[in-house]
Image (cartoon, rainbow, N blue to C red; front, top):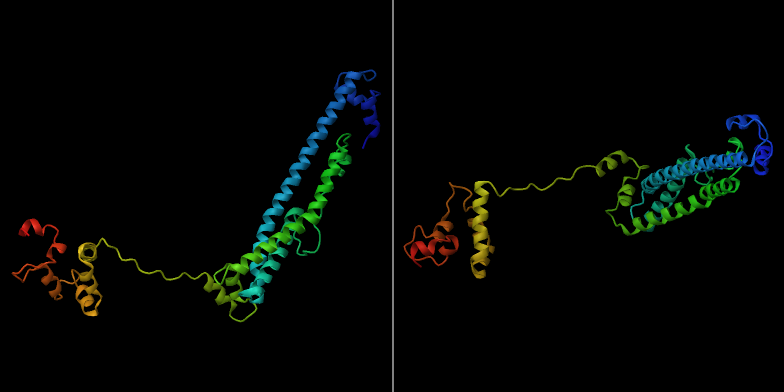
Length: 292
């Protein structure tokens, strides 16, 4: 750092000719010129400090992103390698894998290169070197504080995040049950023969029950009769449909024109001259037509 220039600015002494020419001065340094030069140097130091802050924020953002991915990958990979599918063993494997993955991912993201050793601290940034690199006069304490913050984060900060991540995955695996992603990962048991097929089975689509539309004429007739019966017919009459014989007869109503439908015919009263007490439940307008 050019300390002589700094003292010159602060004391109002001689300033190099290049600086004097930039301000149109050819003689000694006036107090006004010295104040302007000091202000310009402070502004330059402020710009470098803000640039260093943006760089640090970007590094920590990458550490968080890669750490999250590593945490999830580790919490699934370790149970898959050990074959743990439940209980305390699954919780321990998921927690350990999540913590180690978090540390490795965060270290790799922060320093911008792969680091597979979770017990090594990531390389911190030395922002105090900016003072010498950019020939700055002001901001020494601010740059040193930022360097200290970087060291603290790459050591204790990342380790604390890894512990919290590990505990979170351990609790999720312990209380997630047999349907959790951790248990499914453990069921693949990658070190056992046939692991590839078991892994594929995890993503195999499950057969869905076929949905029957109620808008086709045949099905619509059946549901219309069913809804009408269950909504208006006395409970004692509806309960009679519980017998196998009645179910067999009822299942053919409106579905198969070529199938005998004696039950429906008797209900509708087509072959009877006597009044059917249940006809009105099947024919909403029968009262007005028949006069009952």
